Amino acid sequence: MAAPSTPTEDTTLTEDDVRARTQAVLDSVGVDADEVTFRGALWDAGLAMVQFPVGKGGLAASPKLQGAVEETIRAAGRFFHPLATNTIGIGMGLPTVLTYGSEEHHEKYLRRIFTGEDWWCQMFSEPSHGSDVAGLSSRAVRDGDEWVVNGQKVWTSVAHISRYGMLLVRTDPDQPKHKGLSYFILDMHAPGVEIRPLYQITGEAEFNEVFFTDVRIPHSDLLGDVGDGWRVATTTLMNERVALGGSTAPRGSGNIGTLVDLWNKRGPELPVAERAIMRDRVSQLWIEAEVGRLTTLRARSNATVGNPGPEGSVGKLASAELNQRIWIACMDLLGADGMMHEPGYPLTREEGLGRGAQSLSKSFLRSQANTIEGGTSDIMRNILGERVLGLPGEPRVDKDVPWKDIPT
Ligand SMILES: Cc1cc2nc3c(=O)[nH]c(=O)nc-3n(C[C@H](O)[C@H](O)[C@H](O)COP(=O)(O)OP(=O)(O)OC[C@H]3O[C@@H](n4cnc5c(N)ncnc54)[C@H](O)[C@@H]3O)c2cc1C
Image (cartoon, rainbow, N blue to C red; front, side, top):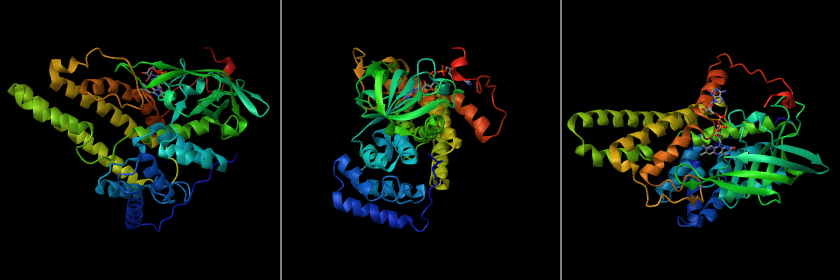
């Protein structure tokens, strides 16, 4: 398969056009339509991801026009954000299948990902390979028109409720680690796929271990060429960092809004000196949240049609670390109450992503994952240093060695 071409942008569309098209969708399905109907109508009107091609959920327009869709819907009294459901499918699966999939893949998968009818998961990390994911060892061996997969993945968010998965496996152990990988769409209901829950510090199991025993995948579900998996995976990862990065929600909303509300409630009870220090901390965090929000808006207004580059790691790094500092401040304001959990601290199977982390203490616990999921902060700094700032790379002694000869 040749390298995917960069799509061209329709520069004639204006914000007013997009608002009018969004209003037409609202008029046709109504503001109270169920999520699948509403999202389906947006997809058909090209308003799901305006930067996507015409006929495939978009208008080939500048991604900055997406804000006009969201604002028009919010003004009509309905909350809408493309990633509010099926985050991994929409944030990562959708752009990857669009970029590397065939017309049949587009037809079969794209719309159902966006409507949330088919959830998707990402199966990259393995017990010995997280940051160094290119060194992974799950194997796929070709057998006629099929591939036979054996191995194990770990930390696979929402695998238990996913219909399909993005699977990165080794197809040629004689090649250096980045070159012997291939990328498949996996039917999560295929025989030989076993999913076991992993409980997190919050008590919820939103992620899993996934085991493969002689799982058969049709060759037609390969994305990119055989051995081209690293390039396809890079597209997924760059989109992941943007999806996990900064928010464009209204000023002062979200986690920082929670902190400010708590400050208004608890702040007056603090001793004078402590109150002054805490006020300073809350103000500083509010400023950082606003800087992050404005930076995300600026990035959106500069974005063009196509996949993001390594600069998406800026938002991921900054928002993950800020988020943790906000929840630490919440815990400090709560004092001993911050240690209280729901009675029994029940272990639950999470039916979404981060949906169970409702209480302040659980949100604090969940935020510990922010600097790990989607690549750790150390790895974000490496990417930014090497690929954005052009600093010297870290030593990579195993880069050109056949994977099978790398000591494990
Ligand atoms: C909530 C959550 C959800 C997740 N969901 C998914 C998912 O859906 N699919 C999936 O595939 N994975 C998922 N992951 C896994 C995640 O991508 C990995 O945990 C992450 O990439 C780190 O890998 P690791 O855990 O193996 O840690 P390691 O790679 O072993 O890292 C250990 C420590 O060493 C540091 N380190 C490692 N290499 C370097 C380096 N070169 N330079 C500097 N420091 C380094 C790391 O920063 C870290 O502090 C999820 C993780 C979490 C916490």
